[in-house]
Length: 440
Ligand SMILES: Cc1cc2nc3c(=O)[nH]c(=O)nc-3n(C[C@H](O)[C@H](O)[C@H](O)COP(=O)(O)OP(=O)(O)OC[C@H]3O[C@@H](n4cnc5c(N)ncnc54)[C@H](O)[C@@H]3O)c2cc1C
Image (cartoon, rainbow, N blue to C red; front, top):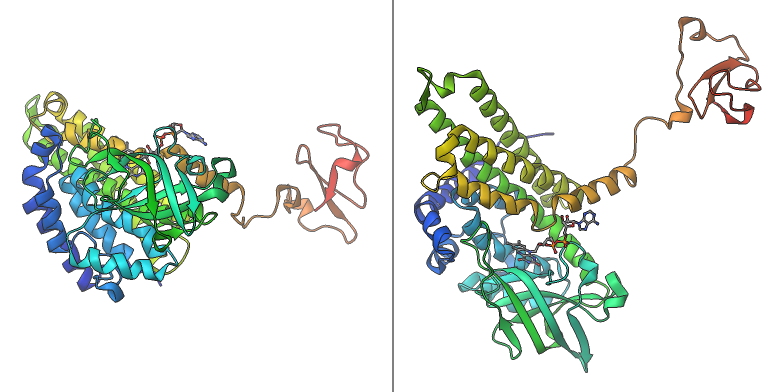
């Protein structure tokens, strides 16, 4: 059975997240964008209010919310500021490998701490020389007794400069590719961890993005999230569950761009009318509305699949690719409706446009999402239609009722269908010999 209605609890979750976004994030979003800083006070309030860490399992002292609940929250936060929403959501990304890990003792060690205390945890697969190709990780994890020693640099790490804990992906041997990847929880205060300067960005400046250098960092065996050979799958499973949230960021930001554009279109006058009266503007708004609605449904479906225990990989890529691309289109069309004012920093659209551009890059670029989707469509996807060479097609009414003993033969090259006891010696269309014909 399909249902599109939120439960009363989800309506309440949405209301609380919306209130938080409007009260705590929106008023300060442009300031922190301008000064390129991440307000710890806002992150702390997000933790206190429960919009951060909502998915920590109940058995470890968390709220135990599902992914549908999470994407509802994320849409609201991103509607106010995608950058701050990214920083708030980053704990869920950082914790996801722990949630998926089979290391129960590690869960007992970190989840209750994260639930009880205002602590941040970041996620690190990317490095200065690789992002999309997770099998290309170079950060080295060398066995030393039962411990591991980490050496390498992680790059682009959201909240990396603020986090207490880090989910670090490394490799025991770069040449082993996927088979060498492993993962660990590393603490910021451990010897050998150093944090780079804040990376200056086009948008989402409210989120902290840095490089992390690991020099002879000793990781005790208890802190292994995934042993060598299991880290790559852990990273992919993590993305499958966190990508719907990237889609939710996009829906939230796109929704705000649309709402601001609607407001402006109703007020701005040109040629003696409100610009909202022009059909060209109305069509832009219609497209925006339809795209926001479509994207949200795709995001919710992907999150729902994850909550049902299904593998959400494909639905996650469908929703992320669609939502992140329409968000940028919508922000751009909103700017067009604002025209000159849209291009200024006095109105909100230019920031939303800058913020939206990142959605198509982090947690898998648009190209990577297409790679996943094309791989599925060309591979594991099961078609309903028979193969073309088996297609039972009757071209005219005379052949619908075939004489007994008459057979249809399809030319596998040009598709010509011949009716008869035998295939013809030669195809009359493409001249291929009898062997090109297959009995349908
Ligand atoms: C602000 C910000 C925050 C981030 N936060 C984090 C974080 O918290 N943790 C983390 O680990 N990473 C983080 N990242 C890194 C992010 O995930 C990567 O930037 C992203 O995965 C792309 O990797 P890349 O930049 O190295 O590009 P590359 O992988 O070098 O790709 C370059 C271009 O080639 C294309 N490409 C690559 N491979 C293929 C292919 N096989 N087929 C077709 N096209 C291909 C890409 O789509 C892209 O267009 C963040 C990045 C940014 C900018």
